[in-house]
Length: 345
Ligand SMILES: Nc1ncnc2c1ncn2[C@@H]1O[C@H](COP(=O)(O)OP(=O)(O)O)[C@@H](O)[C@H]1O
Ligand SMILES: [Mg+2]
Image (cartoon, rainbow, N blue to C red; front, top):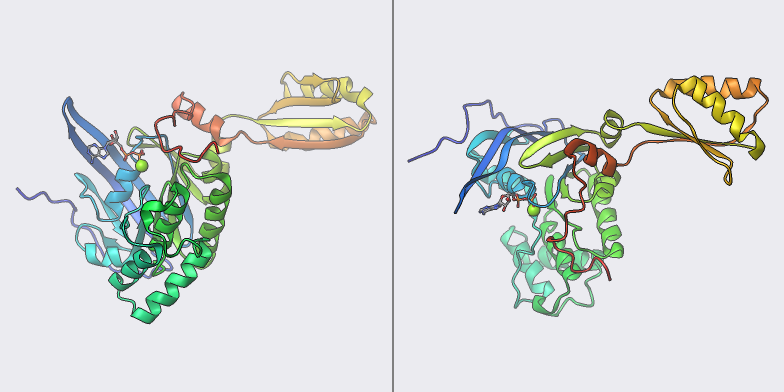
Protein backbone atom coordinates (compact mmCIF):
# COMPACT_ATOMS: atom_id res chain seq x y z
CA UNK A 1 0.00 0.00 0.00
CA UNK A 2 1.26 3.44 -0.74
CA UNK A 3 0.50 6.19 1.66
CA UNK A 4 0.25 9.66 0.32
CA UNK A 5 2.14 11.78 2.73
CA UNK A 6 1.62 15.11 1.18
CA UNK A 7 -1.50 16.87 0.19
CA UNK A 8 -1.09 18.58 -3.14
CA UNK A 9 0.45 21.88 -2.19
CA UNK A 10 2.34 24.57 -3.95
CA UNK A 11 5.99 23.73 -3.50
CA UNK A 12 7.56 26.48 -5.46
CA UNK A 13 11.22 26.59 -4.58
CA UNK A 14 11.80 29.54 -2.36
CA UNK A 15 14.31 32.26 -1.92
CA UNK A 16 16.08 31.10 1.22
CA UNK A 17 16.25 34.61 2.57
CA UNK A 18 12.50 35.17 2.58
CA UNK A 19 10.71 31.81 2.39
CA UNK A 20 10.06 30.26 5.79
CA UNK A 21 12.90 27.88 6.59
CA UNK A 22 10.29 25.47 7.90
CA UNK A 23 6.57 25.40 7.45
CA UNK A 24 4.81 22.38 8.88
CA UNK A 25 1.13 21.72 9.34
CA UNK A 26 -0.59 18.93 11.19
CA UNK A 27 2.40 16.61 11.43
CA UNK A 28 1.47 13.25 12.93
CA UNK A 29 3.58 10.20 13.70
CA UNK A 30 2.25 7.12 15.42
CA UNK A 31 4.46 4.27 16.59
CA UNK A 32 3.10 0.80 17.14
CA UNK A 33 3.76 -0.51 20.60
CA UNK A 34 3.01 -3.83 22.30
CA UNK A 35 0.16 -2.23 24.17
CA UNK A 36 -1.28 -0.44 21.14
CA UNK A 37 -0.31 2.80 19.50
CA UNK A 38 1.78 5.71 20.64
CA UNK A 39 0.94 8.98 18.93
CA UNK A 40 4.40 10.45 19.42
CA UNK A 41 3.64 13.53 17.33
CA UNK A 42 0.02 14.55 17.36
CA UNK A 43 -0.64 17.39 14.92
CA UNK A 44 2.33 19.71 15.14
CA UNK A 45 2.34 23.06 13.31
CA UNK A 46 5.53 25.07 13.03
CA UNK A 47 6.63 28.10 11.06
CA UNK A 48 10.29 29.03 11.33
CA UNK A 49 11.50 32.26 9.74
CA UNK A 50 14.91 32.24 8.06
CA UNK A 51 17.86 33.57 9.98
CA UNK A 52 16.31 32.85 13.36
CA UNK A 53 16.67 30.33 16.14
CA UNK A 54 13.48 28.43 16.80
CA UNK A 55 13.37 26.61 20.11
CA UNK A 56 11.32 23.46 20.55
CA UNK A 57 11.07 23.07 24.28
CA UNK A 58 9.72 20.02 25.98
CA UNK A 59 10.41 17.25 28.45
CA UNK A 60 11.79 13.84 27.60
CA UNK A 61 9.43 11.90 25.35
CA UNK A 62 7.50 14.99 24.23
CA UNK A 63 8.05 14.21 20.54
CA UNK A 64 10.91 16.59 19.76
CA UNK A 65 13.22 14.11 18.03
CA UNK A 66 10.39 12.51 16.08
CA UNK A 67 9.34 15.93 14.82
CA UNK A 68 12.89 16.81 13.81
CA UNK A 69 13.35 13.47 12.04
CA UNK A 70 10.24 14.09 9.96
CA UNK A 71 11.38 17.60 9.05
CA UNK A 72 14.81 16.28 8.09
CA UNK A 73 13.27 13.61 5.79
CA UNK A 74 14.49 10.74 7.97
CA UNK A 75 11.00 9.69 8.96
CA UNK A 76 7.80 9.75 6.96
CA UNK A 77 4.90 11.58 8.58
CA UNK A 78 1.61 9.66 8.88
CA UNK A 79 -0.28 12.87 8.21
CA UNK A 80 0.34 16.52 7.64
CA UNK A 81 2.91 18.18 5.47
CA UNK A 82 6.16 20.05 5.84
CA UNK A 83 8.25 22.26 3.64
CA UNK A 84 11.86 23.32 4.03
CA UNK A 85 12.56 26.60 2.24
CA UNK A 86 9.48 25.87 0.16
CA UNK A 87 10.47 22.31 -0.75
CA UNK A 88 8.09 19.60 0.33
CA UNK A 89 9.98 17.08 2.46
CA UNK A 90 8.06 14.15 0.99
CA UNK A 91 8.30 15.16 -2.64
CA UNK A 92 11.76 16.71 -2.73
CA UNK A 93 13.73 14.85 -0.06
CA UNK A 94 17.02 15.16 -1.95
CA UNK A 95 16.75 18.93 -2.19
CA UNK A 96 15.73 19.17 1.45
CA UNK A 97 18.67 17.02 2.50
CA UNK A 98 21.03 19.33 0.66
CA UNK A 99 19.63 22.27 2.64
CA UNK A 100 19.78 20.84 6.15
CA UNK A 101 22.30 19.63 8.66
CA UNK A 102 21.34 17.46 11.58
CA UNK A 103 23.06 16.69 14.82
CA UNK A 104 21.48 13.96 16.86
CA UNK A 105 21.52 13.40 20.53
CA UNK A 106 23.94 10.63 19.71
CA UNK A 107 26.88 10.98 17.41
CA UNK A 108 26.37 9.34 14.07
CA UNK A 109 30.05 8.82 13.53
CA UNK A 110 32.37 5.81 13.37
CA UNK A 111 33.82 4.58 16.68
CA UNK A 112 37.01 3.10 15.27
CA UNK A 113 37.99 6.14 13.24
CA UNK A 114 39.81 9.14 14.69
CA UNK A 115 38.24 12.59 14.91
CA UNK A 116 40.14 13.69 11.81
CA UNK A 117 39.14 10.60 9.85
CA UNK A 118 35.49 11.02 10.82
CA UNK A 119 35.40 14.62 9.69
CA UNK A 120 37.27 13.77 6.48
CA UNK A 121 34.73 11.06 5.69
CA UNK A 122 31.86 13.49 6.19
CA UNK A 123 33.58 16.15 4.11
CA UNK A 124 34.22 13.74 1.26
CA UNK A 125 30.65 12.43 1.43
CA UNK A 126 29.44 16.00 1.08
CA UNK A 127 31.48 16.40 -2.06
CA UNK A 128 34.39 18.47 -0.77
CA UNK A 129 37.74 17.95 -2.44
CA UNK A 130 40.42 16.26 -0.37
CA UNK A 131 42.14 19.56 0.16
CA UNK A 132 38.96 21.43 1.11
CA UNK A 133 37.89 18.62 3.45
CA UNK A 134 41.27 18.70 5.17
CA UNK A 135 41.15 22.47 5.61
CA UNK A 136 37.62 22.41 6.96
CA UNK A 137 38.48 19.55 9.31
CA UNK A 138 41.34 21.57 10.78
CA UNK A 139 39.12 24.62 11.30
CA UNK A 140 36.38 22.64 12.98
CA UNK A 141 38.73 20.72 15.29
CA UNK A 142 40.15 24.06 16.35
CA UNK A 143 36.77 25.66 16.85
CA UNK A 144 35.53 22.81 19.02
CA UNK A 145 38.77 22.44 20.99
CA UNK A 146 39.39 18.97 19.62
CA UNK A 147 42.79 19.59 18.08
CA UNK A 148 44.61 17.63 20.76
CA UNK A 149 42.26 14.70 20.38
CA UNK A 150 42.43 14.84 16.59
CA UNK A 151 44.15 11.49 16.14
CA UNK A 152 42.43 9.54 18.87
CA UNK A 153 39.75 7.03 17.92
CA UNK A 154 36.26 8.09 18.80
CA UNK A 155 35.77 5.19 21.19
CA UNK A 156 38.17 6.93 23.60
CA UNK A 157 36.17 10.18 23.57
CA UNK A 158 34.18 11.52 26.54
CA UNK A 159 30.52 12.38 26.12
CA UNK A 160 31.26 16.08 25.76
CA UNK A 161 33.92 15.46 23.10
CA UNK A 162 31.54 13.25 21.15
CA UNK A 163 28.91 15.95 21.22
CA UNK A 164 31.36 18.51 19.94
CA UNK A 165 32.54 16.20 17.16
CA UNK A 166 28.92 15.51 16.25
CA UNK A 167 28.21 19.21 15.91
CA UNK A 168 31.47 19.73 14.00
CA UNK A 169 30.46 16.97 11.57
CA UNK A 170 27.12 18.66 10.90
CA UNK A 171 28.96 21.90 10.09
CA UNK A 172 31.39 20.55 7.49
CA UNK A 173 29.35 22.23 4.83
CA UNK A 174 27.45 25.08 6.48
CA UNK A 175 23.85 24.31 5.66
CA UNK A 176 21.20 27.04 5.53
CA UNK A 177 19.11 25.12 8.08
CA UNK A 178 20.55 23.27 11.01
CA UNK A 179 18.62 20.92 13.27
CA UNK A 180 20.23 20.75 16.67
CA UNK A 181 18.54 18.04 18.68
CA UNK A 182 19.29 18.65 22.35
CA UNK A 183 22.84 19.73 21.57
CA UNK A 184 23.66 20.49 25.19
CA UNK A 185 21.77 17.83 27.14
CA UNK A 186 24.16 16.31 29.63
CA UNK A 187 27.03 18.64 28.81
CA UNK A 188 29.12 20.33 31.45
CA UNK A 189 28.48 24.08 31.83
CA UNK A 190 31.67 25.14 30.04
CA UNK A 191 31.03 23.02 26.96
CA UNK A 192 27.43 24.17 27.03
CA UNK A 193 28.48 27.82 26.97
CA UNK A 194 30.84 27.06 24.11
CA UNK A 195 27.99 25.46 22.19
CA UNK A 196 25.81 28.51 22.76
CA UNK A 197 28.54 30.76 21.37
CA UNK A 198 28.84 28.57 18.30
CA UNK A 199 25.09 28.61 17.74
CA UNK A 200 25.00 32.41 18.03
CA UNK A 201 27.87 32.73 15.56
CA UNK A 202 26.17 30.44 13.05
CA UNK A 203 22.98 32.45 13.24
CA UNK A 204 24.85 35.73 12.85
CA UNK A 205 26.28 34.26 9.66
CA UNK A 206 22.80 33.55 8.34
CA UNK A 207 22.11 29.95 9.35
CA UNK A 208 18.61 29.13 10.55
CA UNK A 209 18.56 26.87 13.59
CA UNK A 210 15.86 24.62 14.94
CA UNK A 211 16.98 23.77 18.43
CA UNK A 212 15.29 21.25 20.65
CA UNK A 213 15.94 21.49 24.33
CA UNK A 214 14.73 20.44 27.74
CA UNK A 215 16.30 23.53 29.25
CA UNK A 216 14.15 26.57 29.71
CA UNK A 217 17.07 28.90 30.17
CA UNK A 218 18.60 27.63 26.92
CA UNK A 219 15.46 28.40 24.93
CA UNK A 220 15.19 31.74 26.69
CA UNK A 221 18.83 32.59 25.90
CA UNK A 222 19.02 31.46 22.29
CA UNK A 223 15.62 31.26 20.68
CA UNK A 224 13.81 34.03 18.84
CA UNK A 225 10.63 32.02 19.08
CA UNK A 226 9.76 29.02 21.18
CA UNK A 227 7.22 26.24 20.78
CA UNK A 228 6.47 24.41 23.99
CA UNK A 229 5.72 20.79 23.15
CA UNK A 230 4.23 18.11 25.36
CA UNK A 231 2.75 14.72 24.47
CA UNK A 232 3.28 15.40 20.76
CA UNK A 233 1.42 18.69 20.73
CA UNK A 234 2.46 22.32 20.64
CA UNK A 235 0.84 23.65 23.78
CA UNK A 236 2.13 27.21 23.49
CA UNK A 237 4.28 29.25 21.16
CA UNK A 238 5.64 32.72 20.83
CA UNK A 239 8.69 34.73 21.79
CA UNK A 240 10.15 34.04 25.21
CA UNK A 241 8.69 37.36 26.32
CA UNK A 242 5.25 36.56 24.93
CA UNK A 243 5.22 33.20 26.65
CA UNK A 244 6.29 34.78 29.89
CA UNK A 245 3.73 37.56 29.77
CA UNK A 246 0.85 35.41 28.52
CA UNK A 247 1.04 33.39 31.68
CA UNK A 248 1.78 34.40 35.17
CA UNK A 249 2.29 37.85 36.48
CA UNK A 250 5.27 40.10 36.65
CA UNK A 251 6.58 41.08 40.03
CA UNK A 252 7.40 44.62 41.09
CA UNK A 253 10.32 45.12 43.45
CA UNK A 254 10.96 48.55 44.90
CA UNK A 255 13.43 49.78 47.49
CA UNK A 256 13.11 53.33 48.91
CA UNK A 257 16.36 55.21 49.51
CA UNK A 258 15.34 55.63 53.15
CA UNK A 259 14.51 52.15 54.46
CA UNK A 260 12.13 53.72 57.01
CA UNK A 261 9.87 54.70 54.13
CA UNK A 262 9.33 51.11 53.07
CA UNK A 263 6.12 50.56 55.04
CA UNK A 264 4.51 53.71 53.66
CA UNK A 265 5.71 52.83 50.14
CA UNK A 266 4.04 49.43 50.52
CA UNK A 267 0.73 51.13 51.38
CA UNK A 268 0.96 53.40 48.35
CA UNK A 269 1.74 50.46 46.06
CA UNK A 270 -1.11 48.37 47.47
CA UNK A 271 -3.52 51.19 46.84
CA UNK A 272 -2.50 51.72 43.24
CA UNK A 273 -2.14 48.08 42.23
CA UNK A 274 -5.04 46.78 44.35
CA UNK A 275 -2.77 43.92 45.34
CA UNK A 276 -1.21 42.81 48.57
CA UNK A 277 2.38 43.97 48.82
CA UNK A 278 5.02 42.10 50.76
CA UNK A 279 7.43 44.07 52.89
CA UNK A 280 10.92 42.81 53.64
CA UNK A 281 11.96 45.08 56.56
CA UNK A 282 15.63 44.00 56.64
CA UNK A 283 16.10 44.81 52.96
CA UNK A 284 13.65 47.71 53.10
CA UNK A 285 12.15 46.25 49.93
CA UNK A 286 8.55 46.09 48.79
CA UNK A 287 7.38 43.29 46.47
CA UNK A 288 3.99 43.11 44.75
CA UNK A 289 2.37 41.29 41.82
CA UNK A 290 2.12 43.63 38.85
CA UNK A 291 -0.46 42.88 36.18
CA UNK A 292 -0.35 46.26 34.48
CA UNK A 293 3.02 47.75 33.62
CA UNK A 294 1.37 51.10 32.85
CA UNK A 295 0.72 51.66 36.55
CA UNK A 296 4.42 52.13 37.12
CA UNK A 297 4.24 55.87 36.41
CA UNK A 298 1.34 56.26 38.86
CA UNK A 299 3.37 54.57 41.58
CA UNK A 300 6.38 56.79 41.01
CA UNK A 301 4.27 59.96 41.02
CA UNK A 302 2.44 58.96 44.20
CA UNK A 303 5.72 58.18 45.94
CA UNK A 304 7.19 61.47 44.87
CA UNK A 305 4.22 63.41 46.20
CA UNK A 306 4.91 61.72 49.54
CA UNK A 307 8.59 62.66 49.29
CA UNK A 308 9.65 59.03 49.14
CA UNK A 309 12.78 58.70 47.03
CA UNK A 310 13.33 55.42 45.22
CA UNK A 311 16.73 53.78 45.24
CA UNK A 312 15.98 50.73 43.15
CA UNK A 313 13.04 49.44 41.23
CA UNK A 314 12.48 46.60 38.78
CA UNK A 315 9.76 44.49 37.27
CA UNK A 316 10.58 40.80 37.07
CA UNK A 317 8.84 38.72 34.42
CA UNK A 318 7.99 35.12 35.30
CA UNK A 319 10.65 32.57 34.39
CA UNK A 320 10.05 30.02 31.65
CA UNK A 321 10.00 27.37 34.36
CA UNK A 322 6.96 29.04 35.83
CA UNK A 323 5.48 29.31 32.33
CA UNK A 324 5.89 25.59 31.75
CA UNK A 325 4.44 24.76 35.11
CA UNK A 326 1.42 26.93 34.38
CA UNK A 327 0.81 25.45 30.91
CA UNK A 328 1.32 21.79 31.69
CA UNK A 329 0.51 21.73 35.36
CA UNK A 330 3.77 19.83 35.76
CA UNK A 331 7.27 20.91 36.57
CA UNK A 332 9.90 20.15 33.94
CA UNK A 333 12.38 18.43 36.20
CA UNK A 334 11.46 14.96 34.98
CA UNK A 335 14.84 14.61 33.33
CA UNK A 336 16.12 11.80 35.49
CA UNK A 337 16.06 9.27 32.70
CA UNK A 338 17.77 11.46 30.15
CA UNK A 339 21.45 11.77 29.41
CA UNK A 340 23.08 13.32 32.42
CA UNK A 341 26.55 11.97 31.93
CA UNK A 342 28.39 15.16 32.69
CA UNK A 343 25.83 17.27 34.38
CA UNK A 344 27.09 17.05 37.91
CA UNK A 345 30.79 17.01 37.40
N1 LIG B 1 11.39 4.53 16.63
C1 LIG B 1 10.47 4.53 17.60
N2 LIG B 1 9.66 3.47 17.81
C2 LIG B 1 8.71 3.47 18.77
N3 LIG B 1 8.49 4.51 19.59
C3 LIG B 1 9.25 5.61 19.45
C4 LIG B 1 10.28 5.68 18.45
N4 LIG B 1 10.88 6.89 18.53
C5 LIG B 1 10.25 7.55 19.53
N5 LIG B 1 9.27 6.78 20.09
C6 LIG B 1 8.37 7.22 21.16
O1 LIG B 1 7.77 8.43 20.76
C7 LIG B 1 7.65 9.32 21.84
C8 LIG B 1 8.36 10.62 21.51
O2 LIG B 1 9.74 10.34 21.44
P1 LIG B 1 10.80 11.44 21.00
O3 LIG B 1 10.36 12.07 19.74
O4 LIG B 1 12.12 10.76 20.99
O5 LIG B 1 10.71 12.48 22.18
P2 LIG B 1 11.78 13.57 22.67
O6 LIG B 1 12.80 13.71 21.59
O7 LIG B 1 10.98 14.80 22.90
O8 LIG B 1 12.38 13.05 23.94
C9 LIG B 1 8.19 8.61 23.05
O9 LIG B 1 7.12 8.03 23.74
C10 LIG B 1 9.09 7.55 22.43
O10 LIG B 1 9.18 6.42 23.30
MG1 LIG C 1 14.82 13.51 21.69
